[in-house]
Image (cartoon, rainbow, N blue to C red):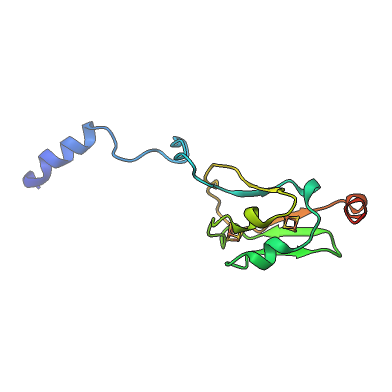
Length: 119
Ligand code: SF4
Ligand code: SF4
C-alpha cells in the first residue's frame, strides 16, 4: 500500500486527464462531418441516397413520404450528401449526442409537399 501512496496522492490532487463528457465538450476538429441531417422540404424522395449508401442505413418510402436513416449504422462517408440531386442532405459538423437507446431518425414529408415535388 505504501508503495502506491505517492501515485494515489498525485492522482487525487492533479488535473483529470480526461474531460467530463458530455458536460464538458470538445470543439469538433476542422472538416469533421458529424451527424447527417436532412432538409425534408427539399427532398423529392427519389431514393438515390438510399441506393448509394454503402452501409444501407437510409430507407426511402415514396408512397408513405418517409425518409429515414439509422445513425448508428452510418459510417459518415458522405456519399449520400454528394449524390443527392437537391442537396437537401447535409452534415451538422458536430458529433452525435450520446443516447441510452439506439433510435432510427424518421422524417415524414407532408402530403401536399410530395405532390408539389412531383410536378
Ligand atoms: S437523394 Fe436527396 S432528394 Fe433523393 S431521397 Fe435522398 S435526400 Fe431525398
Ligand atoms: S454518410 Fe455514408 S453511410 Fe452515412 S447515410 Fe450517407 S451514404 Fe450512408
